[in-house]
Length: 116
Image (cartoon, rainbow, N blue to C red; front, side, top):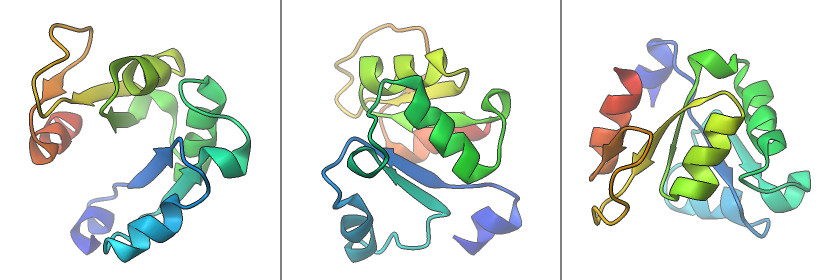
């Protein structure tokens, strides 16, 4: 995670969750994220652009310089795009097919696409 911060990148999570995503991420060893936005805590869920706006505020970035990686085309990718963000689809099963966004079969490949 320090290399991410040293590179000037901000890494966070926006989740449609029940209030438990922060604890779940910490238990998974991902407690070093810059921010976590939990839909049940902010009162709005993806694909609503307001939750992506909350993420932008937490990240301190503009929509046009931000990339969102998500595993649901309509909830994550379309929601992020409607909020003005770039989006990458994480599609490990290759099930989504052709869509109006870059797609990757593995998380590392999705991150590489986001950084390119």
